[in-house]
Image 1 (tube, rainbow, N blue to C red):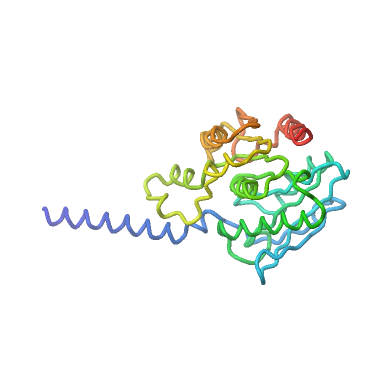
Image 2 (image 1 turned 90 degrees about the vertical axis):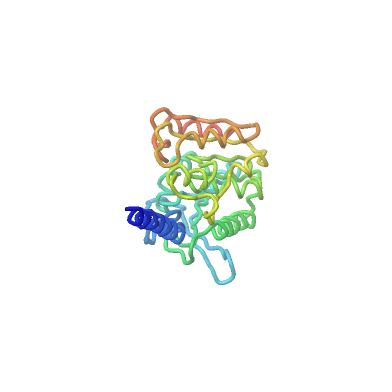
Length: 269
């Protein structure tokens, strides 16, 4: 009986170790579930929308989408989309802001939207830097740049804002860190010591001194709102938040009143 129990115990331990190993090896596929699509500017019926390219690393050329502001005094929104999104969704979500006259520079990450390469924290950070460099070379200085991040893209935006400050920062459904969110969803696994890309926004947010606006839905099942609140608490002034009572994950801009408030925030940055 005891021998049979020990066999069961060691079998359970072996099974658990196997699950941990599989999840460790597959973690980047879970964090970056990029769709195999190749978006086209022509599909959006948006005059002025064009493709631009940057060299993120030597030999790695990425495609992004750009729409100039309607007025030289209006800002350019540098948009960092979420981990299950792409350039198509970026333009669809930002269309009300383009119609308000703001410019848009939608970042195309490696491994997303038909771009070559494999995503990682180091890689997406390099991609974002190349986009900001492109904007600077086009004459858009920091006082005309607004960073807007969605979900995982908020971690990219926070990291960039800590390195290359914009005039304002907008974060939609932000995790305090990917480690926090992963640990909440996979509580039965040793997530924190095994995570390759922690995307720790909380450790960076206190260095950001530009105006900050956080948007988060109370019913978000992917990044629970407690993580958005945690990030907001760690940020310094000036900061604002919209805690939406019914929004889920990244649908808060479906509310026209929220869009109006974000537009006003950007205009008064």
